[in-house]
Length: 148
Image (cartoon, rainbow, N blue to C red; front, side, top):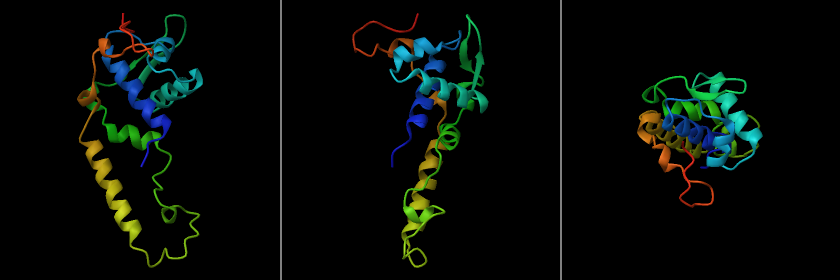
């Protein structure tokens, strides 16, 4: 199983915002911490904002911050928001053409594994994975820190 890029960066953006709780974080500084496209980070921030995980402010002095305490943001909730589906095998999808679907026992096992994965993620919050601002190194790996 592999998480989508949206899920991966949603978790990273939340971790970055949590590391800087006393100020608004900008898209530009987030891009320095996580060198992906501006459009992708903007989509992540918009998605998290619409779901109530982030609060954002537009304009010259704008940015984003956590909308809730880190302990109230369950990792499983973030993944349920950002993963489009959990169709880990074809037969779990609505367009399945698998000829053994009716007799196959694999979907039950795959669904149980997915439920166990989400149950573990539900046991952990953003508070469990928080970092300090100094933990975010520049993309080049040198010691130039991104946090003010």
